[in-house]
Structure formats: C-alpha cells, structure tokens
Length: 115
Image 1 (spheres, rainbow, N blue to C red):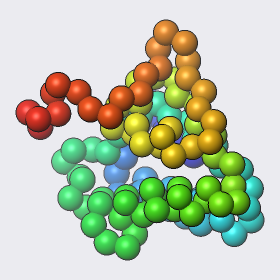
Image 2 (image 1 turned 45 degrees about the vertical axis):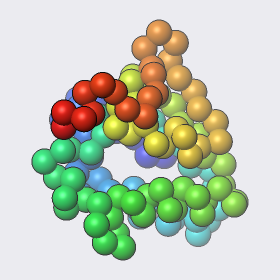
Image 3 (image 1 turned 90 degrees about the vertical axis):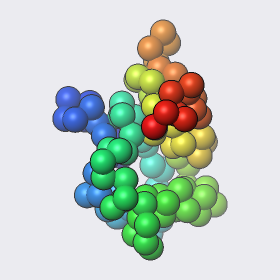
Image 4 (image 1 turned 90 degrees about the horizontal axis):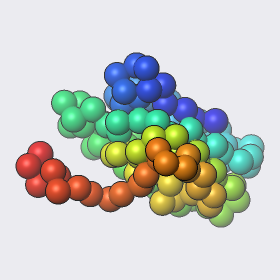
C-alpha cells in the first residue's frame, strides 16, 4: 500500500517519496501481489521537480513500473480529495474508487500555462 499523508506538506512528493514508491513497486513485482494507492496529494513539489524526474530512478520510472505491473498485479486507487498533480496514478490503475462529492481527477487546468 502506498499512501500520501495530507497533513504533511499537503501530501506532496519529494525525491525521497519517489524512491520509496519505486522500492514498493519493485517489491510488488517480485511477489506479484495487489497494489493499493491512497491518494490525497498535491502531487510533486514544484520547487523539487528538477531533482525528481530525470534519471533511471526518477519519477518517470513510477509510470513505467505501472505499465509493467499491469501484466501480473491488480492496482487499486482510492482518491479522497482532488487528485491534482497525482492524477496519472488513477489513470494507470485497474480499479478507481473516488469519494463522492470531494474527489475529482483531471489532466490539466486553466492555471497550468501560467506555471
């Protein structure tokens, strides 16, 4: 199970978060068990994205692993709030559970070009 703690910097990701997620995905791949994501996250911290995405152990690897895991592992995601920049996890999962009236998922917003 991978979960974001919304009480700590809005559940946002740092480089250490990416490494923990990669390790857990690799473990799931080795034992072929289901993977559950609990998403209540602001996504990647904008000021740390340069450190998180490049390289073989960067955040892009999370999505590569998601595709590989689809061959032998069921992936579930529970969204309890808007899935802001963490929106790609639900798109790669087999089952998506969203809290009625609070959770939402979108791939962009009118504010994106201003960032």
